[in-house]
Amino acid sequence: MATIALYSNQIAQMSGMLGETKKTVSDYKSELFSLKTKALAIKQSICNMEDVISSIQASTSVQQAFFMDYQRRLRC
Image (cartoon, rainbow, N blue to C red; front, side):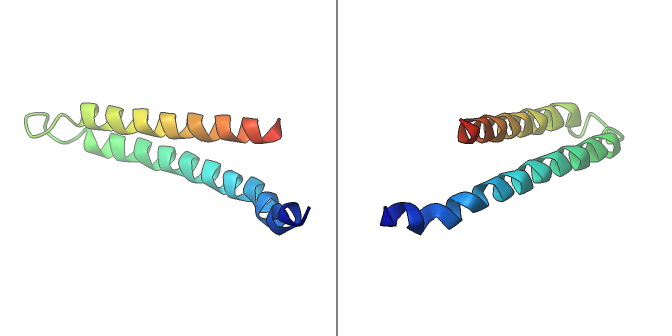
């Protein structure tokens, strides 16, 4: 019983931290879209920015899916 009381505050803070993490990922995706728009002006002979940005977007999607799944599991 003492263990439950010891960790109850930390568990109560999880929802807020997950919300902040979700907002951070969302903000990151928005900034990434802005960066993509600017980066596509770079000559493709220098660097294929479309591939670089697609890779970053895929990573971001994985992070977002992870947090959504984690948040869903906490509710169960």
